[in-house]
Image (cartoon, rainbow, N blue to C red; front, side, top):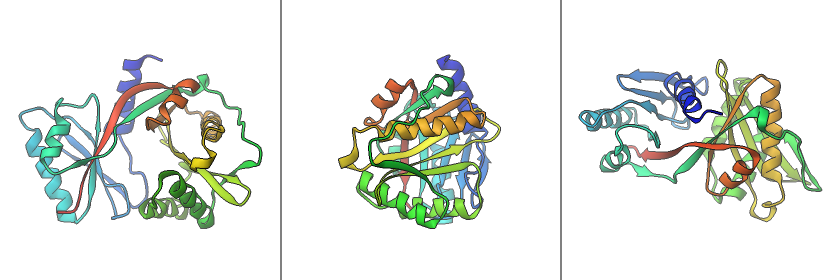
Length: 259
């Protein structure tokens, strides 16, 4: 996998040519910025920008005014190779709060293991209804330590819209959800994104995360996708590297509350 070629493809397909991620969102181009806008529970924010040092602060201020006018919190999703080099510092000065830096990991699906190996007593269950979404939300709360009602509502919306671009899976240990993950397909591109994958603390280290990656890799391969992409935490990055993922760049979300 050629790092520079795949990074350029990633930027073009998933950022500059991004599509709305649900029926309640829209993509807007505003000069050197591409943003997604939707309801309060949707992901609202800047997906891509091409700024220079001279005009960056003015463009940032314009986005703050725009989302404030809509009464929406929003995120500026920055990447390690974005310009200008001090974009993060400029966002801080404009009142944004940074979240943890993550590694953008990418793998050619043909190089990944697709055999699903689960610990005894654990099974993977596809999520097809609201009850399944509730199980996913329960697993995520165990894994990450806090509820995420906005994420739950987004998943319910995707089910209601009959979206064929999202697959959701929950790992069950008996009647208890212990991990959950989803895959978001990007039609017309070579990429499928892996999201979630958090596991309850007492079930970590037993291979559930790896099994969920293998499960989704197999599904993506069957659908003709070439690359899997993950925004990986420091905890999941070593696992992904052992599976065959490479670090493409970094990403840091900067969040601006409603003014």
